[in-house]
Length: 292
Figure 1 (cartoon, one colour):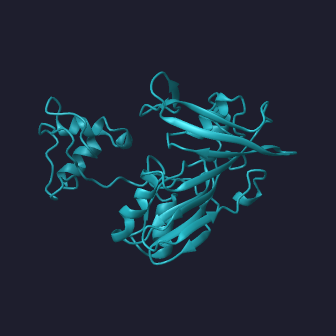
Figure 2 (cartoon, one colour):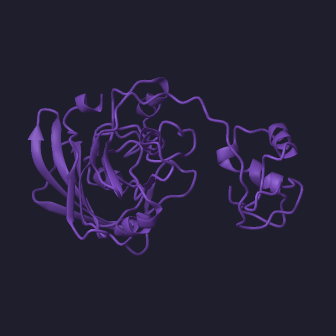
Figure 3 (cartoon, helix red, strand yellow):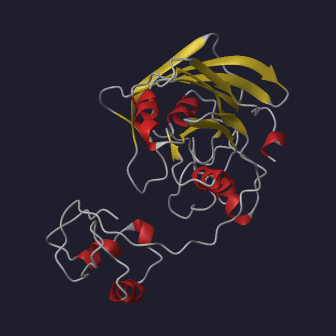
């Protein structure tokens, strides 16, 4: 945990204020410290009553939460000595965060490949399915992560929503900000930091299928932009309005209403081999059958 205050607060107060440790009460925290289980970067036991030092790190193991198993597979689309590309299902987080630890793509892959060296080159939201790339060797990790940081990896998404009242491609340009702790991102005044191209490509009995091309990578960008156009994505529990009936279903083992958003394709020039790569998801937004 990174201490976000100091020295006006003590270490124990900072840890107790950390959302990720909300399930750890004061007595449990003290007991862990007494056993020497809370340490600094050098592995030395930390004194909970010591003044905190801003932006320093404290290390401890969290107890694993009781997680609802995600009953969908994680198909491998491609693998070589440097990378593995998977077709992530809906509801499976990319990496551990909050109450999702073992039920994440990263932990599944590390267990399946028997390697702690597996690391994500980018991420997808937990509710979004589709193409996701991991690196297999620390030596190449930065090169692949840089593809996404510099927007040299071209991503296309597919979404299912209601019919559009426009033709052609609409470009949405605005400023999106998301505050830690808030469920939803918001469009605010200020310089543009979020750009998406959205095109209706097919009308089906289930709804209209859209091609979405993000030119920036803000949190919930595509979901918010679709809602702002009056065509919110089917199954979205947050946009345009919070829908607890959808948001709470997975916590009770009900996976029948996924967000109909899929990272459909990923294309880039391999930074290690120089080969042009293109991977496509096998999932369709028009049906929920391939989430099972």
